[in-house]
Image (cartoon, rainbow, N blue to C red; front, side):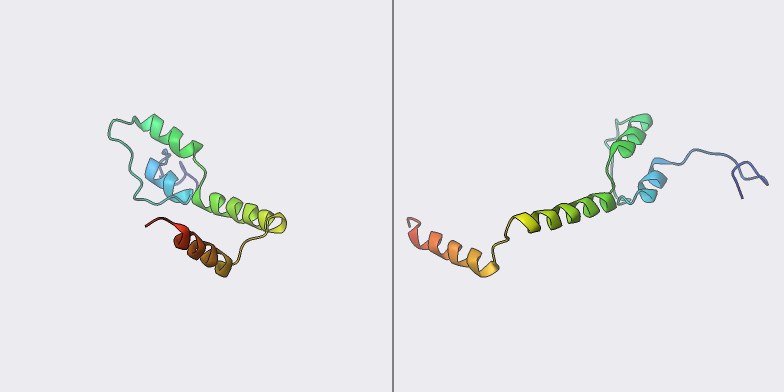
Length: 88
């Protein structure tokens, strides 16, 4: 049923409900001095974790096409070489 129909009251979603809908952890805490309107604004301006992960994945794929990723073995040998030349 729609809000306002059949006795369902119309209401504004709480900040916690908006956090949940947009995929944020419900353990997010705001400073106690932050006004409710400012909390809504902060949530509205934020990029959800799901969108952030999706964008990061696309960027990672694009970078992998143009920038070779060094192998783990290569990184370990560089670290070993640096350790051997470091002053004791």
